[in-house]
Image (cartoon, rainbow, N blue to C red):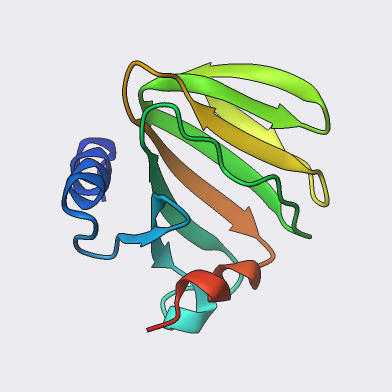
Length: 128
């Protein structure tokens, strides 16, 4: 995996409503790259997301700590009511059990490479 390759794949999946590992969920593209459920990791999940311009994820939380690396676009992440601006090159850590939502600015898609541990909540995205 390279940052550029992941970004290209995520944007193509968004444009084509699915490509490679990327599938559309709730209006955004999610691709789970590694997971114990896929048999290619033991204790961490790696994935990517592409949010269309103006899109906001539903607020959610999970027991996992999450690290997000923003590969393209700009927007913000609301973590427990604190808003963090993000753009290409931003790295953001979301503590476990924090309610958070990610928003893409109106100017274009937001592409995120994310990592979290412990695994488990990615199972909802691995449904065939």
